Length: 313
Image (tube, rainbow, N blue to C red; front, side):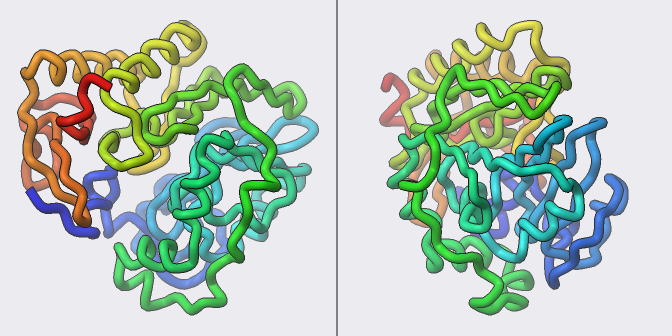
């Protein structure tokens, strides 16, 4: 099964028709209007009393969390457009930035912000993924969006050497709102999840997604990933009632960690479909067969794309 760039968006839970792709706009919109086909670089929806979900022009999701004293922006997208200016239309609080991992679609807009945190295990990945060439290639997954861009639309390249380390057990107090940090190595070495303590919500980013990718050189093997999920489940048990991710609608079912752990067991037992998968030259396997709309044929929730040679790692 070969996957082209446009199909990749669908596999990540995205739909071209709902991305809101095109020219710059800083207009705030409701959740319903996020479905509009009016092209914009950024859109947002308030999903809790103090949380905004921001969607960029390629469909990636970022989160803005406000406390009484300051706010935290989680991820900075592909680094296209003036994200800082847009965020300032949503909050006037002093801002910190937390990067869940170093991939192009989550970390490339960091240069606009002064106080940035990222797990330093992803430093080399960040350097590779946030180059101008890589960002242009990623934006090209939607040709209409790419055609609307010039070099001036791309934010400067940043250096992770200036970032503060983001590590397991850290807590950020925003003023009555606490963000607890949990490492979820798997999708990348430095993949990070965040518990919004008072909101009782867990953000797993790409660490547990509707189509979790575990086949690139920066990923861990399936066995190690399963252990990461088990640790996350143990330390966040009974602490959340909502789950968020970084693609698609942004919402996951509350039992999603259990579903992924079950999927890992099925793969270990050789009971998955192991559909051959190719993406931009990389070879892997889709755990469970999908239909033409990329939904699991067996009716299950979510999927894992993994390297069959690295199951036991």
